[in-house]
Amino acid sequence: MTYSIQTFSFVDGWANTWTDIDAGGVSHPVEFATQAEAQIELQRFCSERGQSIENMRIISITGEVI
Image 1 (cartoon, rainbow, N blue to C red):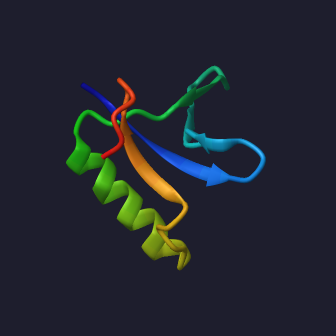
Image 2 (image 1 turned 30 degrees about the horizontal axis):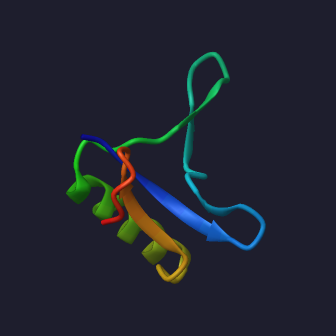
């Protein structure tokens, strides 16, 4: 099972806005191998930017909210 981090906005609702750009310049959604990996990245992201975690969540790719 893989996991993604979703961000909430009033326009789009919950969406995976985390992307990675490959060598060809194509954007792909970021997926994490484990829930723990996603949690670490989310905490790092919020800490570096002084951003609240309130409008973000981790979800399994199968749709289960963690």
